[in-house]
Image (cartoon, rainbow, N blue to C red; front, side, top):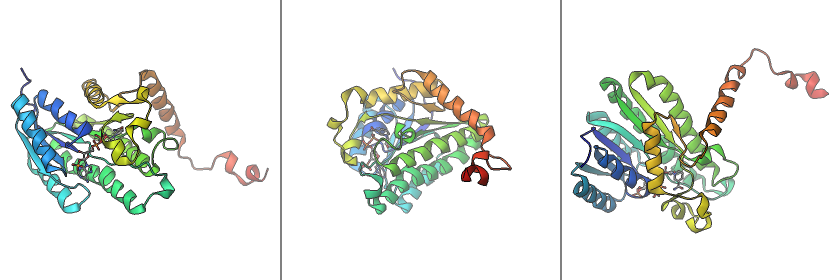
Length: 270
Ligand code: NAP
């Protein structure tokens, strides 16, 4: 009924929403699982359900990824468990408060989870993947990375822009060594994230809100297609291709021995 063993997938933020669906789908695809989040009860319930449904081995590690020592326990799993073939860096928190009105301590906490933990877990996973010549990292970013002026909180958007940049860089460095890295950019997705971020999901127009299972299935289809960046809601992939082409065209022009003419004193004085 289910696929053969594909190794172990470690999924962060698996106690609800997108992460819980990744756990279900990956088990059905043949992965054993290590599930990470703070809420052990929810993780245990999900683990029992998945094992019951798929027969896969599911381990639970309750850890707060914003706490260095607890994050370190998860890093140790990635460094020492040679069965891990896939890391899903999904855990994240958001905020809806305008950037300059937000509590800077909460912003730092968001960076700890969305940026620092995601980075440290990638650094913990990659050496084993390189040694074994294979491994995949899925990093959950967000479409708000592309629209920081318009949507939610700026530190949240910036944390997700970081995820896209790190993914592109790692993929370029490691792609020919058997290690794949994918960034997934969900649009508005029906999960507890909205309530937790201070915006009821009911205020988001239904026509731009995706079911979490549809989002994850599309993201996995993007992974199967070999994409580095997957935007499940983007109807026409030509829009992304044009965006990337414009970025690539900029690259050769971004560093120069002399400033652009418009910034020379005569031009500025004129
Ligand atoms: P969610 O239902 O709130 O899930 C967030 C998950 O992260 C939960 O399992 C939560 O578990 C875990 N988590 C939060 N803080 C943690 C911490 N300190 N340590 C360990 N785990 C922690 O929201 P979601 O929508 O599924 O979010 C998943 C990812 O998708 C996030 O990175 C989010 O930024 C991204 N995303 C969501 C949307 C959306 O519209 N929903 C859109 C774009 C991107 P515990 O509370 O048990 O720790």
